[in-house]
Image (cartoon, rainbow, N blue to C red):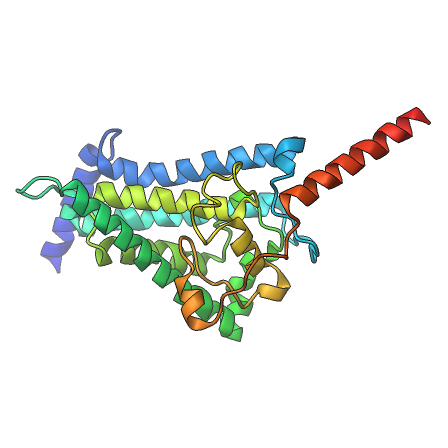
Length: 286
């Protein structure tokens, strides 16, 4: 035990003095995920506040919006930052315990085709993990009340609320899900960083409540902002558990709910804007 602790202490010193520097992959694994999260979320928050007519017509808006959110944006920001701090801490532990996790083998970096295949495998593993954990915290009354109900105080999702969870659920769903995807798919650190950054961005986009072209990935994946928004509606709260990429588990296990018809279309939102503009012009003429 003493020798193991001594080895970890040596690894920690090496990590802090050599590997946690810009340009090192360990630095990228720690910094790029939260950086991507807040840059993308910040962009959509700006759009939400600007309320430009062009972008507003591409919002995902329910015909029946349901109850308003019951949590402040300040509380959301603090909880998300805390969860990201825990993820960074776990990454640091992994770097210390598994010193060679980011080492390049004697054969050199993995071929690009191998990395791409493992990237896709990592997406499926992440989806599988998140589907079952997500479903579990819904069907178990105790877990929903004490864990997952925190996330559903955001009845109307918005971008930087994507990772707003109870601390324990965030650890189980996202943090451990990343570890399982990393080792389950046999990812090197460069590929895992790319996958986790992409997963972060995808999760933000699924909560931003915009369609394409404002949300560029909305039409590329079946799991999109409209699909996930159904899950935040009381009518679909026990449906559409899949996240963040695909919907196959929902299809296979009977928890799929089609978002078509639940939201106003782009054409309907534009028509509402036109009617409002006409009413304002008529009021000015009076």
